[in-house]
Image (tube, rainbow, N blue to C red; front, side, top):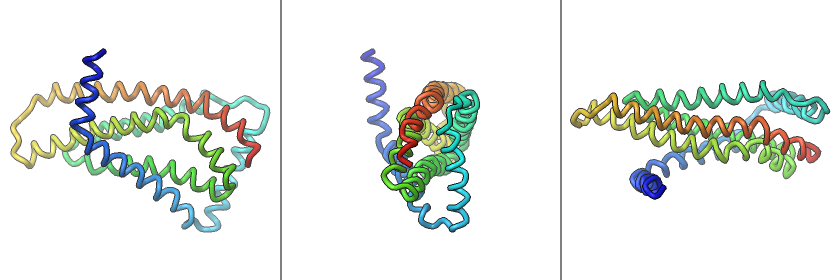
Length: 210
């Protein structure tokens, strides 16, 4: 156990600047997403309201939610996101797109919270928190860790290609890199289960605030 803790501490110590960069891009995405709400056209706001309140009507009903469908959509979206990060990591130029993916991830969260806050004030903020916070307590750290490993691996390939760095055991490194993504995939799976079973409960409790 101590060895694992020391290894984790050593990893964080070595990559603290990369983690900082990832969280800066993620935070910038949240800010940009929340501000972009103010640039929506009236027709766009109307369409979003139509979709949102259609979902609220469904949520307010007595029928049980289709949890299988919610889980499938969550697994598909988050699985695709994780695969994109993995794919970017094995490309020597992929580190650029890793940063873009983290920015976009933050943007979607910021847009959701910003839109509901603008439309429904404090009640909208509370509902948005219930909708996005529980699963993102798992999604965000896992995505940040995956992004750091993808950035590091991609940068290593970039330096190998253009920086004159000596060859390294690519096959072994790729296996280790892929194993890390399998581990983060477990956290994404847990987050999808939370999104399926926990978040809807909170949303139904807070739907009366809207």
